[in-house]
Length: 202
Image 1 (spheres, rainbow, N blue to C red):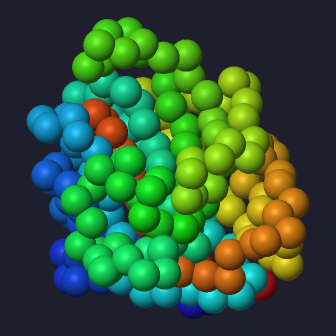
Image 2 (cartoon, rainbow, N blue to C red):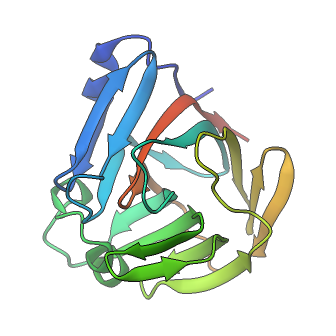
């Protein structure tokens, strides 16, 4: 075990830092991210770097009020070489990460219509920055309001595996696998909670 939190104490917030204008707080032993007021994107970073082969698990649930049912998770995240800003100082703009950071992104969204003028059919995707390259995609996994999702992500040797509710969703072999970096939760126009966050060495 490299890190664990059940968010049983508000002091857990000392482990985290946010990018964006939304709210991040602990309530009822859960970590909440709420971007429903601003709708510009909100990221919550764990202020600890992890290297090597790791396994990450957490529970996530989108709750009311919810518009985009958006659950994102960043891992192996670092600013690109030569960038002056630390990730904890980024603005929260999604485009800024794609242009100025290296990371992997696991995304799960729900069905929605006319959210900031956009509509969506729910999906799950695995992407890689910089460049927001699509590595894996499925429409067989999507976010449903008030439904619990158990995420398990493994980065081992040159393989990334993402399981959601014990079902294999993404498997990708990356010959240029990132060594390590920060972990972060992100959402867009959504209120969600996180619980049972654990990081293991494989």
